Image 1: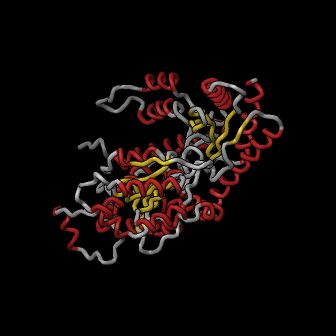
Image 2 (image 1 turned 90 degrees about the vertical axis):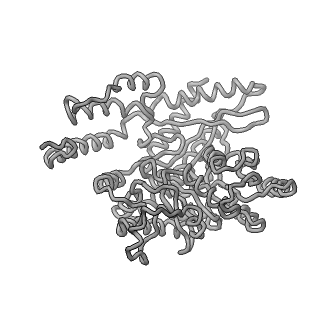
Length: 487
């Protein structure tokens, strides 16, 4: 009898060998691959070319034809794993993590409950305990690996809500605070957690785009006087726009005085606690009640690897633990020494085994390799900043928004005298296009407030483990030459 979904060993080895060659060829070609692939109209044309009906029988040509289709599809995208990708927040996807996913997917063990896979869950718990300690948390801390910062922020808000309001369901007066520079997932998560949109305060920032703590204190006092119930402050430990770090110690003091939950959104910046300079820059983060951190950013893992850490793990468990009669069989086992179950600390019951994505790379490379890479990224951002300052000293019409607080540098062309905002923005968009058209690097842009509106601003984020000094120097050359040709 034939079982089509159970290929024999020869077929499996052939597929594995061919896929391995495809992946290794892709990695070897990355230094010479354009920093941005075919997107927009060109990408849509490729999408039409590769699209085909799902067949009832295996695709003719098998694995070879399948990989030919993927070889067309992959370049029609942002090249997020290449050394020249300096846009948004780069995601690395280190090879060891891909091996971990292959192992995890093939053994396919259930890791929602530790009793179902005690040893595998212990490996994940070991990584979470290590991360908690790196952030300055004690042994009472607990963590959970989630799909990313969006779900981690949502879970953190649920924990804070549970602590202050229980499960009453009445959150009409619940009020949360963040800044205008917060990631968009923050307000979205608060709304999904049942906090009224009118009660989500996005407060002003200072000249370095950090949360204004005086405005925060004033807003909290004002809201309490009107009968609202402030319960949560979300500070950024590295904003997406400029890499700004909110005054963490000041926020911690205020939250302690007013009995508010302090959550640090360190999805981008959190990884830098692994290196000495980053830990100095993020001083005070250990005082947060909870921390969002994305290993798929600063630890270079594949997308879909987020983390929430809570200083007092009892709060995390209280907000997420639910029982079910169909799980009673596990209660027959000796569970006294098992690792914490992910389902008791997060929203998922069924989940992929994300822990191996962290554990295997740490075993194969060691923690020091990550510390060194992150220290390098901080230094490269400073190097780029110094290079821009030199261009300005040499007469380039550029302005730098701020010195790098982490590994993001924001800059733009200077505004001409009496130049309309629309014209200034158009020149900066053209400036960005000129840089990116050289295809050695890919930069993204944002808008930042100025006196008469929002100004288009270019930004680089140095975070790929494949980005080194040669590519940052190439970026500086492209910036310089794009200014010269702009006229």
